[in-house]
Image (cartoon, rainbow, N blue to C red; front, side):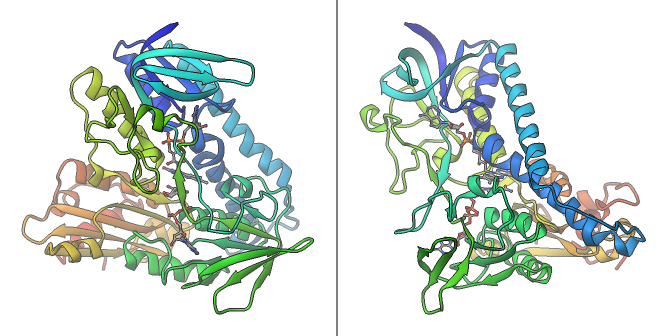
Length: 461
Ligand code: FAD
Ligand code: NAD
């Protein structure tokens, strides 16, 4: 029977990164993945394919409309959806091959099949043709998450699809209804709107992007409405009725809404199917998230868990940080994740990026803070590149000036946030950011000016 120091079940960003780090620390590591390609949700049907389509659909929209005002007119813009999808798949395949190479380089043994806990130190790997049992001192569960649906609504993949389906429609739906105004709904809603769909987002709450700073979320809603997405807030979807070629979505207290496709984007649930948690006595909460302590240890000896499977922010980089912290804790004695310094980015246009506390959280916690705001409009580079929408908001402690939260809506927000994450990680004050020289003309000057605004001394406002 094969024997390892660490066996990782699930090769998403949490699992494969943890495997590499453990191998770097000198451990004998195996990884089990049930899909053909490594990389998990993120690479196969998440972060990467969605960003490829966001970029391509943005170029299409620019070619159609956005370039005219700069004096560039293109007479015949055509959409070749299959080529766009081919480019997306090419990116995924190339990156997946890269992960295969990383596994080989780090001498991580790969097992193809479904992993299941068999009790202390033992895991079974079942493929279509056979079953292998492997043994390990430590087992790391990194099986991620799968799309959720609503009670009574089945994701059939044809009329009602998840994000995985919406990443591969073979034609542009005329009418697309998105259930859920969260990150997936807005990113994939943006893709299909740009490619020609009439998109309606039905959101149960009275706002979009729950959890995000509400001032920024309100601005985002206004902008997305202007771009042509319809939003129905406070919409309680109670069912769907499929016809021959269309679907009627039933919303409490309203007329049914007809469309060609429904994208179900109401969140994701932990992937614990046939993982052997019960046999191994691993504790989960009511929603199925595996329970761990601050070392990512479950209540079952030698079994650890990270990433989407344990809940919290469902983000690839959060899964990676947890994977690294878990194996560093095991094999070098110390590992830590600073959950206050985990950025979140929504890759719409404009982008939205956030780190640390929101204004609502600070109010709720009774923390006194100062706030600095700076609009993109007043930034030279934003003017030159036509990215006038957006703002940077910095929240700093009223007494110590320590940066507690930064929230950005605007072009390249996902890149600008990196500086703010570093600031929070290093315990910087807003004055530290304000006194740091930022290149001119760059969008990053909006961050410096927002930091100056905390002390009410912006230069360009
Ligand atoms: P996963 O990536 O889900 O990987 C788990 C792996 O385990 C999978 O490969 C699965 O096949 C395998 N597995 C499951 N059970 C078993 C088993 N029993 N045996 C063997 N293998 C098993 N996050 C971001 O940070 N940025 C983004 O831009 C972003 N965009 C997204 C877009 C979409 C459309 C979606 C759906 C998600 C997106 N996410 C994004 C979220 C991100 O994909 C997840 O947070 C991340 O993939 C979680 O990593 P993980 O390693 O915990 O799990
Ligand atoms: P989400 O939690 O971001 O949003 C779900 C939305 O659905 C919420 O606004 C919620 O209020 C709404 N909702 C719930 N029940 C509803 C109902 N009955 N009717 C109407 N609306 C309802 O979830 P998601 O958008 O499905 O994304 C899943 C996960 O994937 C998220 O945790 C996200 O972090 C991750 N993800 C991240 C990125 C990124 O980082 N850019 C991109 C895509 C997905």
